[in-house]
Amino acid sequence: MRTKRVVALSVAIAAIVLGVAVAVLAWHGKSVTGESASGPRRQNAIITAIEADGRIEWDEARFVHAEVDNNIAEPIPDSHHVGRLSDSATFFVPLGETSDGVTLDATGAGASPISRDKFLASWPNVYAVQLTIKGDLIIKVAEYYHP
Image 1 (spheres, rainbow, N blue to C red):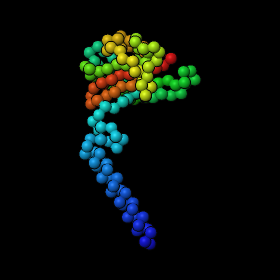
Image 2: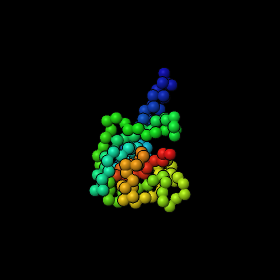
Image 3: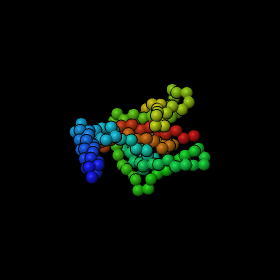
Image 4: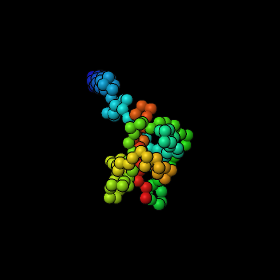
């Protein structure tokens, strides 16, 4: 009987400690994963329209196994979005003008900078991208490499 009470008390204390930790993180604007609650989020996407005035449309994307080239991005049904590019949005591609070969970041997205105008001129020949979204604005577009 005493063992059951000790276990129950231990579980209750652990729950309280966890609750306090989550509350402290929330108080400081952090999520349990360590990212800022209001900070940027990343989303894999296939751009369906992009305009010089900053209007952009996309479908969320997932990568699936393919027999050729190992994997391919496909749109997720019913995941269409319309947004706006930040005036200071940055653009990255896997094969840049100044790099020798493929340049990728840790997530596999292109890491070679390209101007907004050149990126817009390359669409619709853009493969899947990783969008970085802050609030209502796209602040970064990084194209994934696809041979």
